[in-house]
Amino acid sequence: MEPFSSHWRMAKGELSQALKESLVVIDSSVLLDLYRVTPIARKEMIESLLTVKENIWVPHQVALEFHRNRVEAARDQLAFYDETCKSLETAQNQALQRLNEFANRSALDGNEKKRLKEPLEDAFRAAIDRVKSHQGVFDLTISRVLNDDPVLRALAELLDGRVGQPLPEDDYVKAQAEAAHRRDNRIPPGYKDRAKRTNPDGDYLWWEQTLIKAADVRKPVLIISNDEKEDWVNKRLDFSLGPREELVEEIRRRADVALRIVNFATFLESVKVGTAVSVSRETLSQANIARRQSEKRSRRIIVSRAVVESFEEFAVRALEGRGQELSESMARQAKAADDPDMKELLDTEVARHQDAIEMYQRWLQQLREAVSRASRLKDDLVIHLEDDALRRTLLKRVYEAREGGADNP
Image 1 (cartoon, rainbow, N blue to C red):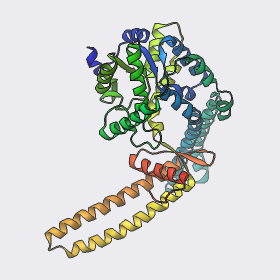
Image 2: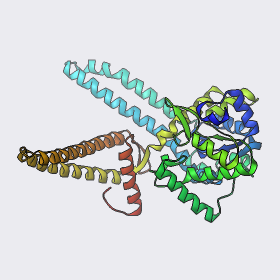
Image 3: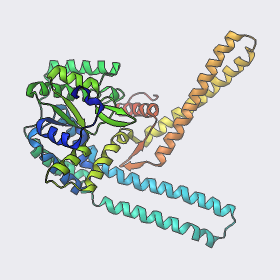
Image 4: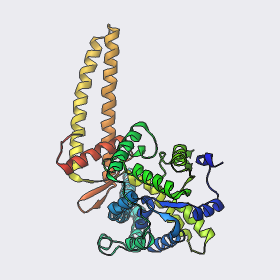
């Protein structure tokens, strides 16, 4: 059944045995999530990893990405509390606005309006105060991560002598070319990162390093990763099953070993059942939340107000220009009513302008809503955008602003 491992999940007993027999490869998504949980959960997670210390191995690329992103990972959690409070405040303002409209249309006097709004204001105030109190449980600050990082210290002990070497320069250049080829042709892993401006080769690089290590040790490979994008795992009805068939075949061809992939929460559950290490329900819950948040974090952008304002100005100008072009095309369309061929061409042109106008209107609305819910990091805004095209376009402006580039996307 092993050749079909892409299509079924490992049972708990199988996972416990695999952890004893396999090269256990940890992805940076797991290491960075240690910065996004409470101190108690972090302690239990690290103790769980220590149970398989003898089999753990980390590709050089994973270690590199961890060091590059660990400060930002801590900042993620700090921003999360601010974002939550901001979202609650926005919801409160919207609810109060609706109550004000109701009170005015119902001709309520001042005292009745106050009695109507007070329970809502009290409830939101209590919720926001509770969120802020929980923020005090989180023990990491940017200063502590920079100067006395407890996660870094724990991982230094866990991974001492268990981090791979970088690829030689010639092999690295070849791997970069292969990564680009795979992105262009949707060959896993890594093609889901084709829109990334930074480190688009990362997934393939650490996969290549893992293939080399697997061929050397000739042991089954078990990857623990919270990256559950479709270029890594096989999904059915949005449920992750096993690794992509292409990855199973590639590692068998290159190293003649089996491959499995599990997320960190699944690993923790196995440790809880199979060892004496304590893994609380709260820790499992935080691991699952961190896993689900990984995709959401990928849609987050840290942007300055200047970039937002510049983009809005661009979108407004684009709307005005497209509106003028639409008017001109519709005027020509009316004159060409007796010419079927010309009318068909103009119909297409009109539809193209209308689509563009709808897109810019949608982008402006989504951006303004995202900004209204944004939290702040010093002078920047932390916003979430679901529209991939809008997100890529705004990211392009962010990078151009950093590099002093062009004004328009």
